[in-house]
Image (cartoon, rainbow, N blue to C red):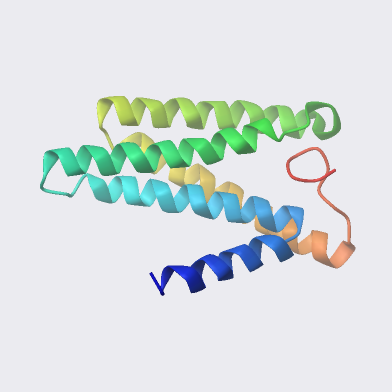
Amino acid sequence: MAVAEPNAAYLRTQVETASPGQLIVLLYDGAIRFMHRAIEGFDIGNPSESIETINNNLLRAQDIIAELTACLDMEAGGEIAANLFRLYEYMHHRLTHANVKKTAEPIREIVALMEDLKEAWTEVSLQERTDATPVRGLCLAS
């Protein structure tokens, strides 16, 4: 348990000191990590453990995507928020399909999309720090 506490403290500090853009990047990191764990679940020899690993990790990734969706401000975010909403809905749908059918391909597709979006959010986050201009309407900013 001693190892988990320093990791939890580090994560808590990281979240508490992050800008809105950095928080979004952290959410993407988490979703990507859970999807990679789900993909690894396909290689587990024990069928019930494999199914449980895939299911639990896809549900966690979907929870993050649902949070990203819920925090969009469609009015302030305009067309970008609307496009992200549609994309998040698609991602959620594809991960549901992957979980029901127990197939890895949709997960790989969504990982690639999330990695591209994470890269874009990383750039936004860097600009947010240098310009002191917060992200508005797209998540976690007021």
